[in-house]
Image 1 (cartoon, one colour):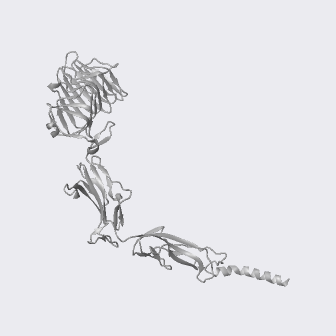
Image 2 (cartoon, helix red, strand yellow):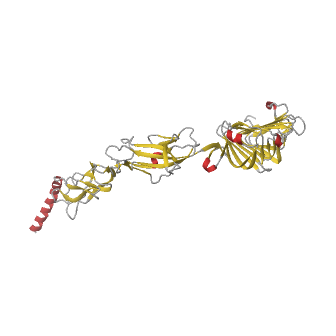
Image 3 (cartoon, one colour):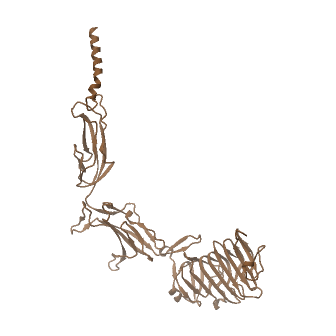
Length: 506
């Protein structure tokens, strides 16, 4: 019994002494069958990954743990990046990736304490010392529509090593050359172009007034190599792999206002438009047929002895400031021709049509439709002949149409023909005739948005007048719109008819 008592007394004594033993040691002591945590962490944190180039030597991170735990540094691939096992200093040896670890394996410095395994790590990307430039894997060759130039981020089209940084701000240069072909050698000759400019950040912009079909090569180049890097040389000691090029296509094009009122573009290659310039007019026959297609008027020409026939669906864009004066426009077969007239941003282009004796004085004849989306049309008829005759539709969406007649109808639509004014279009029709049947407009008129003016010494309109919401037709016989009264019903026998927006206070 005394023996058991003595044993119990010794256990109590050991328990009472335990706090003193633990507090007097640097670490909590573990046993092989019960290791304790090492609490390893970065003292100098390198982050998740770092980049080096071959030959670089640097200590990125140092680790810490409980004070008596042994920390060793190791590399997953010493052939790419080796590490000093004690200091953690890394030496970049070859291109590739390696993982650097700081590891606590178990034993303490006195060889008696056992810690749990622990590690922290980061990735080292080792790059070469030679500079390199290549077209980016996902790069697509840009196309620039000259009438709608967008800034191109050239830098994003290339993969350059080393990448441009604040320290390497001027190391990468960008430039463009125009591509021509030597017919004898069939080799590309590259000439410096003045069509585009590229700033130091790789932003490409089209130069003012540049508008042509052209193929360019845009280059990214590193020369000289920045500090710590080298240019790779060929056997003749000329730099290689330090530049790359990508093709950029310029498309000659024009901008115009489409039917929806938004900007649209024609490119010469895709849309195959024909330019009607002064030479085109000068070389034209007395009667020239415009076949279905696209035409771009830049002329400032007045050839009222020459006329046009419209065959199919003809689209004509009038450049701002252009003036095309001709004798007549006629469908190439009754109702077989449609003339679509587009303007540019300012809608200052003008088509001037003056009667021509060979077509009996009609300025415009037999069209299935005249659709205006801009520009200005002035049409004049001869004595006792309609200015615009036997057309199915006239749609004025934007732009201005003026028709002047003498002793006959200024506009005589085909049976059930209709004039529509929408989207801010404007039509002004005048007739000097005083005898019966001298109408300014003979046909139906619908106004949804815009203005309509018809004046005649006999009667302004013979036909149905329809006004949309917010618009109305008014009439008067004394040519004073301020004294005009609203038309009751859908017809008028007055000498003057106006279609206009209803004022809010009315």
